[in-house]
Amino acid sequence: MSTLKTSLMLAGLLAFSTGYAQTTGTAPSAETRAGATATIGKDQARAMHDRIEQTAKADKEACEGMKDNAQDVCEAEAKGKEKVAKAELKYQQSGSDRDRVNLAEMKAEANYEVAKEKCEDQQGDAQSSCKKAAKETERAARAEAKKTGSRS
Image 1 (tube, rainbow, N blue to C red):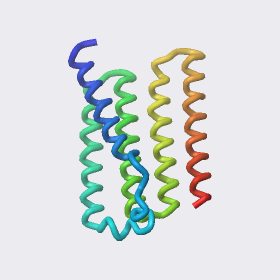
Image 2: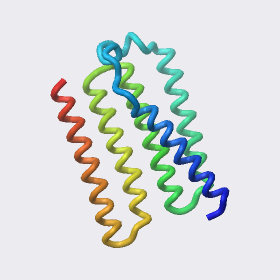
Image 3: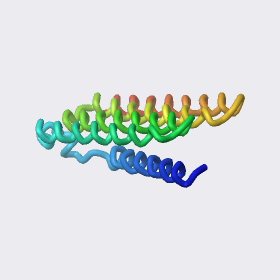
Image 4: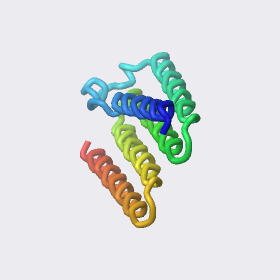
């Protein structure tokens, strides 16, 4: 693999993991849970939404130079990161349990889509079992999100 491809792939992974870590970071504060609408005004939410859109566009453009499954994985990571960031913003605006559960489900879905694409590098039974394991992990994460949502 050329140095350029390796550098682009590492840069893409680093960008995704950094952004993903920011969107999956610490749990929301009691203040955010109690009244997120009061902490994020419409102007601030609009600015955050615009940043999410710009970041998503840049992430997707970074995938264009890649080929084959590396590009598919990169695109899945970019889409997942965008969906999670938008769900996080919505939760920050509302502070509702429903949006918190939706955020957790979006994270599970994003992780599944990336894992599923990574499985494409494998063949035959290994690919099949990789996809099954990814789906089971997603189901468990969604079930946990719903379970914690019903306790609130």
